[in-house]
View 1 (spheres, rainbow, N blue to C red):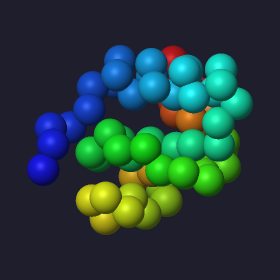
View 2 (cartoon, rainbow, N blue to C red):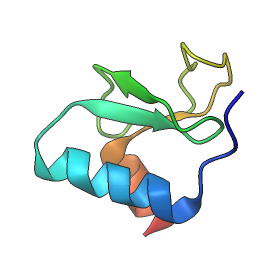
View 3 (cartoon, rainbow, N blue to C red):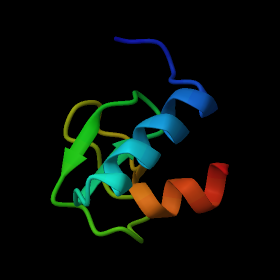
Length: 65
């Protein structure tokens, strides 16, 4: 299992994804991306680790920025 992602790394990934117009989210538990996630998604289940900690990229920017 990978180490918990840092706030800075998640924020950078979310900013990059938003700039590209991608509908993607990221798991705050493992850092893995999740495809086809709404920008305002909260607490979706992660397909990689099973945690309900996937947030849409724009939501992460609001939470972490």
